[in-house]
Length: 233
Image (cartoon, rainbow, N blue to C red; front, side, top):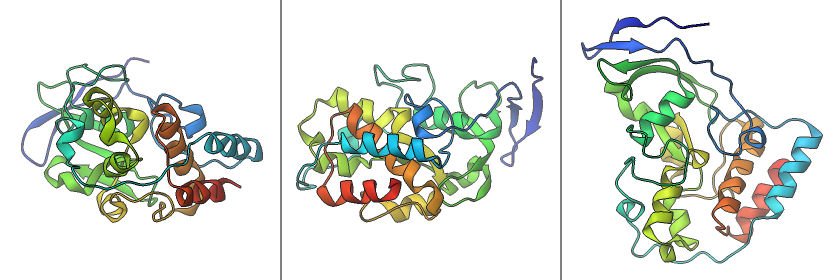
């Protein structure tokens, strides 16, 4: 059914257009191998949990190196639309806006822009919160790198080409909009040190972590792999 464009007024005083044409179907990681479907639905069935364990077993184990030399710019400009070979790449919108639009409901855009999200509702999979977000409170919703960039650097991305680092930093498979303080609490931690507060989503979270690791042939520490397997057994 065709949607109708509705003119809203944001809290910043700018008119915005609400997108009523999108149908939001949240998905679990096993049904979302390219990261283009929203959310992170819990993995509950025995068969799916077994499939998740099989995937996690494919992840290589490696030693964690030094963080020396790491800065965010080593993975490209923040949310720049310059990656190649991943969904949404070079579509004219910044990566953060692509992800807000993917996972948000009741999404509103800045007047005259097909990209800039100024308001939405987000169901955060990590904390279970439903967040009514406005752009003036930008940090209340942050886009989490499931496999943190500093973790990637320490596990071998320091030796990758810049192009590969830009891809993993902007790949929707590795990106989930979440409640900002939860993302800040996670920092650069792997699954042995940090897991989402909502226990039922932890198997899905480590499965997504494994999907990214397998796609980019990125090893994880032995303790992180053990923690990942424990969440889905």
